[in-house]
Image (cartoon, rainbow, N blue to C red):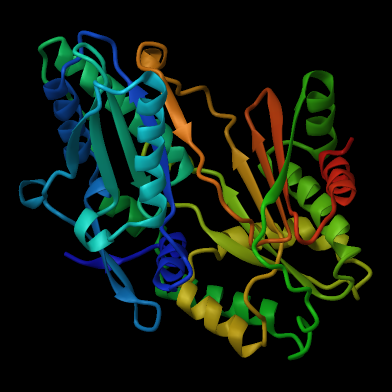
Length: 405
Protein backbone atom coordinates (compact mmCIF):
# COMPACT_ATOMS: atom_id res chain seq x y z
CA UNK A 1 0.00 0.00 0.00
CA UNK A 2 1.34 3.43 -0.95
CA UNK A 3 1.15 6.35 1.47
CA UNK A 4 2.51 9.94 1.53
CA UNK A 5 6.16 10.68 2.21
CA UNK A 6 7.13 13.05 4.99
CA UNK A 7 8.40 16.55 4.22
CA UNK A 8 12.05 15.70 4.88
CA UNK A 9 11.84 12.74 2.51
CA UNK A 10 10.26 14.97 -0.14
CA UNK A 11 13.13 17.47 0.26
CA UNK A 12 15.70 14.75 -0.42
CA UNK A 13 13.77 13.14 -3.27
CA UNK A 14 13.31 16.53 -4.90
CA UNK A 15 17.03 17.19 -4.67
CA UNK A 16 17.92 13.78 -6.11
CA UNK A 17 15.51 14.33 -8.99
CA UNK A 18 17.55 17.33 -10.14
CA UNK A 19 20.38 16.37 -12.46
CA UNK A 20 23.04 18.14 -10.41
CA UNK A 21 22.26 16.25 -7.20
CA UNK A 22 23.67 12.85 -6.28
CA UNK A 23 22.40 10.55 -3.54
CA UNK A 24 22.97 11.28 0.12
CA UNK A 25 23.88 8.05 1.91
CA UNK A 26 25.48 7.43 5.28
CA UNK A 27 28.48 5.14 4.73
CA UNK A 28 30.11 2.78 7.27
CA UNK A 29 32.70 0.02 7.60
CA UNK A 30 32.26 -2.61 10.34
CA UNK A 31 35.15 -4.93 11.26
CA UNK A 32 34.09 -8.20 12.90
CA UNK A 33 36.05 -10.47 15.26
CA UNK A 34 37.68 -13.58 13.84
CA UNK A 35 34.93 -16.01 14.84
CA UNK A 36 32.31 -14.21 12.72
CA UNK A 37 31.77 -15.90 9.35
CA UNK A 38 30.06 -14.52 6.21
CA UNK A 39 26.87 -16.48 6.89
CA UNK A 40 26.60 -14.82 10.32
CA UNK A 41 26.88 -11.37 8.71
CA UNK A 42 24.18 -12.24 6.18
CA UNK A 43 21.92 -13.49 9.00
CA UNK A 44 22.37 -10.18 10.79
CA UNK A 45 21.56 -8.22 7.62
CA UNK A 46 18.46 -10.34 7.04
CA UNK A 47 17.32 -9.68 10.61
CA UNK A 48 17.50 -5.88 10.39
CA UNK A 49 16.03 -5.69 6.88
CA UNK A 50 13.15 -7.89 8.04
CA UNK A 51 12.81 -5.97 11.31
CA UNK A 52 13.04 -2.34 10.10
CA UNK A 53 10.38 -1.47 7.52
CA UNK A 54 12.29 1.72 6.58
CA UNK A 55 14.99 -0.47 4.97
CA UNK A 56 12.40 -1.90 2.57
CA UNK A 57 10.99 1.41 1.37
CA UNK A 58 10.27 2.09 -2.29
CA UNK A 59 9.47 5.56 -3.59
CA UNK A 60 7.46 6.74 -6.57
CA UNK A 61 6.20 10.03 -7.98
CA UNK A 62 7.89 13.29 -8.91
CA UNK A 63 8.44 16.84 -7.69
CA UNK A 64 5.64 18.09 -9.92
CA UNK A 65 3.06 15.47 -8.89
CA UNK A 66 4.21 14.61 -5.37
CA UNK A 67 5.91 11.55 -3.88
CA UNK A 68 4.59 8.35 -2.34
CA UNK A 69 6.28 5.56 -0.39
CA UNK A 70 5.48 1.92 0.26
CA UNK A 71 7.00 -0.85 2.37
CA UNK A 72 7.98 -3.86 0.31
CA UNK A 73 6.96 -7.12 2.03
CA UNK A 74 10.04 -9.01 3.19
CA UNK A 75 9.10 -12.17 1.30
CA UNK A 76 9.08 -10.13 -1.93
CA UNK A 77 12.23 -8.18 -1.12
CA UNK A 78 15.53 -8.96 -2.86
CA UNK A 79 18.38 -8.59 -0.37
CA UNK A 80 21.05 -6.18 -1.68
CA UNK A 81 24.26 -7.94 -0.57
CA UNK A 82 27.52 -8.35 -2.50
CA UNK A 83 30.57 -10.50 -1.66
CA UNK A 84 34.11 -9.32 -2.49
CA UNK A 85 37.41 -11.13 -1.82
CA UNK A 86 40.44 -8.82 -1.44
CA UNK A 87 42.49 -11.14 0.77
CA UNK A 88 45.46 -10.97 -1.62
CA UNK A 89 45.76 -7.16 -1.19
CA UNK A 90 47.74 -5.25 1.44
CA UNK A 91 45.91 -3.70 4.39
CA UNK A 92 46.30 -0.23 2.87
CA UNK A 93 44.83 -1.35 -0.44
CA UNK A 94 41.95 -3.06 1.37
CA UNK A 95 41.14 0.16 3.23
CA UNK A 96 41.22 2.16 0.00
CA UNK A 97 39.01 -0.46 -1.66
CA UNK A 98 36.39 -0.08 1.09
CA UNK A 99 36.46 3.71 0.71
CA UNK A 100 36.04 3.39 -3.07
CA UNK A 101 32.86 1.33 -2.55
CA UNK A 102 31.40 3.98 -0.25
CA UNK A 103 32.43 6.81 -2.56
CA UNK A 104 30.74 5.03 -5.46
CA UNK A 105 27.54 4.95 -3.46
CA UNK A 106 27.63 8.76 -3.06
CA UNK A 107 27.84 9.40 -6.82
CA UNK A 108 26.04 6.41 -8.36
CA UNK A 109 22.77 5.22 -6.93
CA UNK A 110 19.74 3.88 -8.75
CA UNK A 111 17.07 3.72 -6.06
CA UNK A 112 14.72 1.73 -8.32
CA UNK A 113 17.32 -1.05 -8.50
CA UNK A 114 19.10 -0.74 -5.16
CA UNK A 115 16.42 0.56 -2.83
CA UNK A 116 17.69 2.44 0.22
CA UNK A 117 20.67 0.34 1.34
CA UNK A 118 23.64 -1.58 -0.04
CA UNK A 119 25.77 -4.12 1.86
CA UNK A 120 29.14 -5.48 0.71
CA UNK A 121 30.79 -8.32 2.68
CA UNK A 122 34.55 -7.99 2.15
CA UNK A 123 36.96 -10.85 2.89
CA UNK A 124 40.27 -9.44 4.12
CA UNK A 125 41.84 -12.76 5.15
CA UNK A 126 40.86 -16.29 6.05
CA UNK A 127 39.62 -15.13 9.46
CA UNK A 128 38.75 -11.45 8.98
CA UNK A 129 35.63 -10.02 7.36
CA UNK A 130 34.35 -6.50 7.06
CA UNK A 131 30.93 -5.15 6.17
CA UNK A 132 30.97 -2.05 3.98
CA UNK A 133 27.53 -0.50 3.62
CA UNK A 134 25.51 2.59 2.75
CA UNK A 135 22.12 3.68 4.04
CA UNK A 136 20.15 6.31 2.16
CA UNK A 137 19.21 9.43 4.11
CA UNK A 138 15.75 9.46 2.47
CA UNK A 139 14.87 6.43 4.63
CA UNK A 140 17.16 6.85 7.66
CA UNK A 141 17.82 10.02 9.63
CA UNK A 142 20.69 10.58 12.05
CA UNK A 143 18.91 9.41 15.23
CA UNK A 144 17.93 6.21 13.39
CA UNK A 145 21.54 5.46 12.48
CA UNK A 146 22.39 4.56 16.08
CA UNK A 147 19.42 2.19 16.24
CA UNK A 148 20.37 0.45 12.99
CA UNK A 149 24.07 0.11 13.86
CA UNK A 150 23.30 -1.31 17.30
CA UNK A 151 20.79 -3.80 15.88
CA UNK A 152 23.16 -4.89 13.12
CA UNK A 153 26.09 -5.53 15.49
CA UNK A 154 23.87 -7.38 17.92
CA UNK A 155 22.21 -9.51 15.23
CA UNK A 156 25.52 -10.59 13.66
CA UNK A 157 27.07 -11.52 17.01
CA UNK A 158 23.90 -13.38 18.03
CA UNK A 159 24.04 -15.38 14.79
CA UNK A 160 27.73 -16.13 15.44
CA UNK A 161 26.69 -17.69 18.76
CA UNK A 162 24.39 -20.08 16.91
CA UNK A 163 21.18 -18.30 17.91
CA UNK A 164 18.50 -16.60 15.80
CA UNK A 165 18.53 -12.78 16.01
CA UNK A 166 15.35 -11.27 17.47
CA UNK A 167 14.19 -7.77 16.53
CA UNK A 168 11.80 -5.53 18.49
CA UNK A 169 8.39 -4.68 16.94
CA UNK A 170 8.51 -1.99 14.22
CA UNK A 171 5.58 0.38 13.63
CA UNK A 172 6.89 2.49 10.77
CA UNK A 173 3.62 3.07 8.92
CA UNK A 174 1.79 3.97 12.13
CA UNK A 175 4.62 6.36 13.10
CA UNK A 176 4.42 8.11 9.72
CA UNK A 177 0.63 8.32 10.02
CA UNK A 178 1.00 9.94 13.42
CA UNK A 179 3.29 12.66 12.02
CA UNK A 180 1.34 13.48 8.84
CA UNK A 181 -0.85 16.56 9.13
CA UNK A 182 -4.60 16.35 9.53
CA UNK A 183 -6.61 18.42 7.01
CA UNK A 184 -7.07 21.21 9.58
CA UNK A 185 -3.37 21.23 10.51
CA UNK A 186 -2.42 21.18 6.82
CA UNK A 187 -4.55 24.28 6.21
CA UNK A 188 -2.92 26.00 9.19
CA UNK A 189 0.55 25.09 7.90
CA UNK A 190 -0.22 26.49 4.45
CA UNK A 191 -1.42 29.75 6.02
CA UNK A 192 1.75 29.87 8.13
CA UNK A 193 4.13 29.50 5.19
CA UNK A 194 2.18 31.91 2.98
CA UNK A 195 2.31 34.51 5.77
CA UNK A 196 6.03 33.91 6.27
CA UNK A 197 6.71 34.28 2.56
CA UNK A 198 4.21 37.08 1.90
CA UNK A 199 6.90 39.69 1.32
CA UNK A 200 7.56 42.13 -1.54
CA UNK A 201 8.73 40.40 -4.69
CA UNK A 202 12.18 41.93 -4.38
CA UNK A 203 12.63 41.13 -0.67
CA UNK A 204 15.13 38.39 -1.44
CA UNK A 205 16.67 40.03 -4.49
CA UNK A 206 20.32 40.90 -4.49
CA UNK A 207 21.46 37.84 -2.57
CA UNK A 208 25.10 37.04 -3.06
CA UNK A 209 25.84 34.13 -5.37
CA UNK A 210 27.72 31.33 -3.62
CA UNK A 211 29.18 28.74 -5.97
CA UNK A 212 29.74 25.30 -4.38
CA UNK A 213 33.25 25.29 -2.93
CA UNK A 214 35.44 23.44 -0.46
CA UNK A 215 34.22 24.03 3.11
CA UNK A 216 36.40 25.42 5.85
CA UNK A 217 35.48 23.45 8.96
CA UNK A 218 35.87 24.60 12.57
CA UNK A 219 34.91 22.57 15.63
CA UNK A 220 34.65 23.28 19.34
CA UNK A 221 33.36 21.50 22.43
CA UNK A 222 31.74 23.58 25.16
CA UNK A 223 31.70 21.53 28.35
CA UNK A 224 31.98 21.87 32.12
CA UNK A 225 31.08 25.15 33.80
CA UNK A 226 30.64 27.13 30.53
CA UNK A 227 28.12 24.52 29.36
CA UNK A 228 26.19 24.61 32.65
CA UNK A 229 26.19 28.43 32.69
CA UNK A 230 24.94 28.68 29.10
CA UNK A 231 22.12 26.24 29.87
CA UNK A 232 21.19 28.27 32.94
CA UNK A 233 21.19 31.50 30.94
CA UNK A 234 19.08 30.11 28.10
CA UNK A 235 16.57 28.39 30.36
CA UNK A 236 15.42 24.80 30.45
CA UNK A 237 14.52 22.81 27.37
CA UNK A 238 15.85 22.79 23.84
CA UNK A 239 13.92 25.82 22.57
CA UNK A 240 15.87 28.43 24.54
CA UNK A 241 19.23 26.89 23.69
CA UNK A 242 18.52 26.52 19.99
CA UNK A 243 17.17 30.08 19.85
CA UNK A 244 20.35 31.35 21.50
CA UNK A 245 22.61 29.77 18.88
CA UNK A 246 20.25 30.71 16.06
CA UNK A 247 20.41 34.32 17.26
CA UNK A 248 24.21 34.20 16.92
CA UNK A 249 23.95 32.89 13.35
CA UNK A 250 21.35 35.47 12.34
CA UNK A 251 23.38 38.30 13.90
CA UNK A 252 26.52 37.22 12.03
CA UNK A 253 24.66 36.79 8.74
CA UNK A 254 22.99 40.21 9.11
CA UNK A 255 26.32 41.87 8.30
CA UNK A 256 26.34 40.15 4.91
CA UNK A 257 22.59 40.37 4.15
CA UNK A 258 21.26 43.41 6.05
CA UNK A 259 17.64 43.24 4.81
CA UNK A 260 15.00 40.53 4.96
CA UNK A 261 16.74 37.18 4.91
CA UNK A 262 16.09 33.50 5.34
CA UNK A 263 17.76 30.78 7.41
CA UNK A 264 17.10 27.10 6.71
CA UNK A 265 16.58 25.29 10.02
CA UNK A 266 17.01 21.57 10.63
CA UNK A 267 15.63 20.82 14.09
CA UNK A 268 16.52 17.21 15.02
CA UNK A 269 14.59 16.63 18.21
CA UNK A 270 12.78 13.28 18.57
CA UNK A 271 9.56 13.02 20.52
CA UNK A 272 9.34 10.24 23.11
CA UNK A 273 7.06 8.14 20.91
CA UNK A 274 9.58 8.23 18.04
CA UNK A 275 12.65 7.64 20.22
CA UNK A 276 13.13 4.02 19.09
CA UNK A 277 11.56 4.25 15.63
CA UNK A 278 13.78 3.90 12.55
CA UNK A 279 12.87 6.27 9.72
CA UNK A 280 13.42 9.73 8.26
CA UNK A 281 11.62 12.21 10.50
CA UNK A 282 13.94 15.25 10.24
CA UNK A 283 12.99 18.23 8.09
CA UNK A 284 14.63 21.43 6.85
CA UNK A 285 12.37 24.49 6.91
CA UNK A 286 12.99 28.22 6.43
CA UNK A 287 12.76 30.95 9.02
CA UNK A 288 12.20 34.46 7.66
CA UNK A 289 13.99 37.29 9.48
CA UNK A 290 13.03 40.91 8.77
CA UNK A 291 15.86 43.13 9.96
CA UNK A 292 13.73 46.18 9.25
CA UNK A 293 11.66 45.45 12.34
CA UNK A 294 13.29 46.53 15.57
CA UNK A 295 11.93 43.55 17.49
CA UNK A 296 13.31 40.86 15.12
CA UNK A 297 15.54 39.39 17.84
CA UNK A 298 12.63 38.99 20.23
CA UNK A 299 10.76 36.90 17.69
CA UNK A 300 13.47 34.29 16.95
CA UNK A 301 12.34 31.78 19.56
CA UNK A 302 8.69 32.11 18.56
CA UNK A 303 9.50 31.69 14.88
CA UNK A 304 11.60 28.63 15.64
CA UNK A 305 8.74 27.00 17.57
CA UNK A 306 6.15 27.80 14.89
CA UNK A 307 8.44 26.54 12.13
CA UNK A 308 8.86 23.21 13.93
CA UNK A 309 5.11 22.97 14.54
CA UNK A 310 4.33 23.49 10.84
CA UNK A 311 7.28 21.63 9.37
CA UNK A 312 5.41 18.75 7.72
CA UNK A 313 3.79 20.71 4.86
CA UNK A 314 4.65 19.08 1.53
CA UNK A 315 7.97 20.35 0.17
CA UNK A 316 6.50 20.85 -3.30
CA UNK A 317 3.92 23.31 -1.94
CA UNK A 318 6.51 25.17 0.12
CA UNK A 319 9.01 25.45 -2.76
CA UNK A 320 6.23 26.66 -5.09
CA UNK A 321 5.40 29.38 -2.56
CA UNK A 322 9.06 30.38 -2.49
CA UNK A 323 9.28 30.49 -6.28
CA UNK A 324 6.18 32.67 -6.53
CA UNK A 325 7.84 35.12 -4.16
CA UNK A 326 10.99 35.27 -6.27
CA UNK A 327 13.22 33.45 -3.81
CA UNK A 328 16.22 32.09 -5.76
CA UNK A 329 17.97 28.77 -5.44
CA UNK A 330 18.70 28.58 -1.70
CA UNK A 331 21.88 30.66 -1.18
CA UNK A 332 21.05 30.77 2.53
CA UNK A 333 22.77 29.70 5.75
CA UNK A 334 21.65 26.45 7.34
CA UNK A 335 21.22 25.88 11.09
CA UNK A 336 21.10 22.34 12.51
CA UNK A 337 20.21 21.79 16.17
CA UNK A 338 20.47 18.19 17.40
CA UNK A 339 19.15 17.11 20.78
CA UNK A 340 21.45 14.20 21.66
CA UNK A 341 20.89 14.55 25.40
CA UNK A 342 18.96 11.31 25.91
CA UNK A 343 20.81 8.59 27.86
CA UNK A 344 23.51 7.10 25.67
CA UNK A 345 22.29 4.30 23.42
CA UNK A 346 25.79 3.19 22.49
CA UNK A 347 25.84 -0.58 22.12
CA UNK A 348 28.08 -2.72 24.31
CA UNK A 349 29.14 -4.47 21.11
CA UNK A 350 30.61 -1.21 19.70
CA UNK A 351 34.03 -2.12 21.12
CA UNK A 352 33.78 -5.69 19.83
CA UNK A 353 32.73 -4.56 16.33
CA UNK A 354 34.58 -1.30 15.54
CA UNK A 355 32.63 0.89 13.13
CA UNK A 356 34.12 3.65 11.00
CA UNK A 357 32.00 6.40 9.45
CA UNK A 358 32.83 7.39 5.87
CA UNK A 359 32.93 11.10 5.06
CA UNK A 360 33.04 11.71 1.33
CA UNK A 361 34.72 14.87 0.02
CA UNK A 362 32.11 17.44 -0.94
CA UNK A 363 31.57 21.06 -1.91
CA UNK A 364 29.53 23.35 0.34
CA UNK A 365 26.73 25.06 -1.60
CA UNK A 366 25.70 27.21 1.38
CA UNK A 367 27.55 30.30 2.62
CA UNK A 368 27.55 29.11 6.28
CA UNK A 369 26.47 25.98 8.12
CA UNK A 370 26.15 25.88 11.93
CA UNK A 371 25.50 22.57 13.69
CA UNK A 372 24.91 22.33 17.44
CA UNK A 373 24.68 18.93 19.11
CA UNK A 374 23.65 18.95 22.79
CA UNK A 375 24.89 15.71 24.36
CA UNK A 376 23.57 16.55 27.82
CA UNK A 377 27.15 17.14 29.01
CA UNK A 378 28.53 19.41 26.28
CA UNK A 379 27.73 21.33 23.14
CA UNK A 380 29.53 19.99 20.08
CA UNK A 381 29.75 22.99 17.75
CA UNK A 382 30.61 22.61 14.05
CA UNK A 383 30.86 25.61 11.72
CA UNK A 384 31.45 25.28 7.99
CA UNK A 385 32.04 28.25 5.72
CA UNK A 386 32.12 28.41 1.93
CA UNK A 387 35.77 28.97 0.94
CA UNK A 388 34.69 30.87 -2.18
CA UNK A 389 32.72 33.31 -0.05
CA UNK A 390 34.93 33.79 3.02
CA UNK A 391 38.67 34.09 3.50
CA UNK A 392 40.56 32.13 6.14
CA UNK A 393 40.50 35.16 8.46
CA UNK A 394 36.78 35.80 7.87
CA UNK A 395 35.99 32.14 8.53
CA UNK A 396 37.92 32.19 11.79
CA UNK A 397 36.11 35.36 12.88
CA UNK A 398 32.69 33.87 12.04
CA UNK A 399 33.55 30.75 14.01
CA UNK A 400 34.53 32.76 17.09
CA UNK A 401 31.22 34.65 16.90
CA UNK A 402 29.09 31.55 16.48
CA UNK A 403 30.93 29.49 19.10
CA UNK A 404 30.87 32.40 21.54
CA UNK A 405 34.63 32.50 21.95
